[in-house]
Picture 1 (cartoon, rainbow, N blue to C red):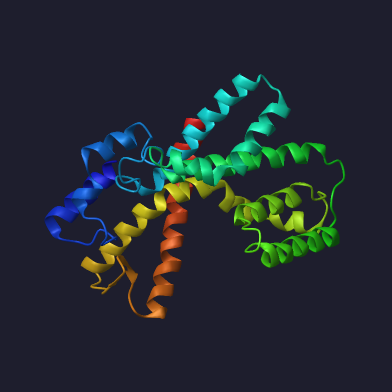
Picture 2: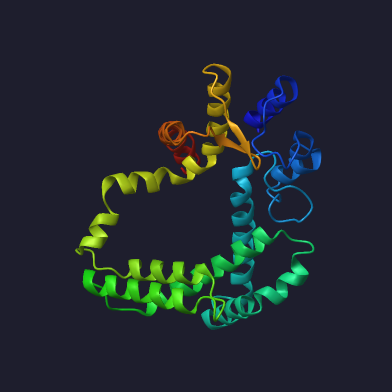
Length: 267
């Protein structure tokens, strides 16, 4: 919040771009949106701008209340997997129909989060029943087969990308430990980025905004305002350098956040 208040001061008094021309600073920083962010309802309730004070925190909003729904549902079904799966499948099957009513009051981002979470639960139940493990060849064949089937039938049967993602996650989860694909996914650099990914995500937009303003004010870099996005200089060379350096800076601060904030709060 402190970073966003500082950002608001900069926007108001120094006439700098907010990064999205479609929304004025007044719309971004309303008292209503502040309290929505405070109670993590900004992407749950359909009564404000979910990306205002801390745009990256919309995920926390949807995830927090999705977990709450999951906890209540677990209490209701009392560990009866069959009833839980039946409720989940019913929600997924009638998702579009239910959304016509729920989207009047709830943000579609919350509905999507709840949908994908329930899909993940069903994938876990399937994973529990699978006793065999895949080697590299079978994994690659099943991966390619899933991709081909999805590309062929996705429009015909209106198959969402989440289905393909769940299938890939399931295939990865049943890999043999000693196969090449599994060893590749467990390489130290990939594990490192996976470990700090949440802290990276939470800090990356603030880093990007501050980085762009420093480039504008100190180094006099000109950015184009293309559809409200102000990260384009018009030069692919400058854009590439800025992107790589921005990722490096965000990785550094994401690492610090993970070690000195995220890990401590977990403990």
